Image 1 (cartoon, rainbow, N blue to C red):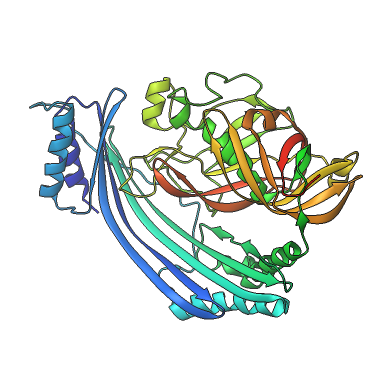
Image 2: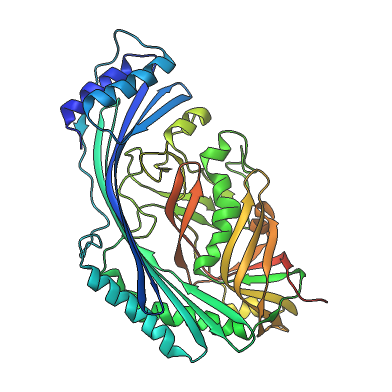
Length: 462
């Protein structure tokens, strides 16, 4: 990492231009991925990453450059190119930095990047062996374990100088079951901003069993019928629908460019009064948490929607300028190679009071989406299409047959208004979110909730 004196010189050089703001993002880190097939390690891949990104603003105009050659002379050359794009000046602001001390809300005990490879493989074997021992129908099991350690230093022309270290681990187990005619899969992939101590509370055995449970259910699944119907979406990864269909439309990345269905709607009702939605980057050791965002601002708990009323957006500094609004600490990026923008952290619908029995009551024909899969969304229109990984029919108020091939099709605005019940069992699940500033870890979450009417795509003939 560069010294305070070096950073002051480089930032002062940045400000000898038409820029009114300059920022330097430094990163040193490593990541590791271990893959296993049928109890045998197939691959161990470790990547070391080090580099610097420099950004200059002039009003709402931004220029960005990055390099992995981090000596001062090379950085000066890159900065001069950025200055030239805005217009150089012989004089400018003299930058003086003040180092900020931040509280570490996400302590770790066992650094996954320093732990012995054998210890990590042993954890993976526990998941794999458990999966095979659960059922004779299991034909194949894959396990992957990923670990990340990222140390960043962020400085800017306002005098900020701050450091943060982010450590994460995640295990994914996929089990494949056959009933003699079909092969179905189930996946479980929990993770956290923790070290290997994470696997003491979320054990590899639990991960393996959950993957097998889903695979076995799907071998018994029937084709899903289609049509408009009530749908109960379970907790945890069910929150991916809010994340994709609504969350991205609440990011300033879209709002500042009038590319969101929620533009200019603060203070207006955009959801059922049952819905309170939160993006919270401060949750201790959560997968999507950081002590500071990638502009060096303290992470926050952001209440996006309260009782159906839009309260705020997720805002980074540049888009905040465009919107004449302050940053909400929502700036994130995959690495120094990406210019940051507003992104989600741990985004979820808050718990309500409705019971599962009340949700089921009165549904003559519906779908229980116990576990969601992937999907796609258009943030400008809010239209989405999501696969249901594990689903069941609801008939006359009772859960009956498992179904396959189900998908949920709709519009983010519409689904928010159609949520008529919200349960108590809030849970979060982990994913990777891709956008213009790269792929970042995010939590999605919700309690079990009911949507009064949504289009279900299926494969069965009615």
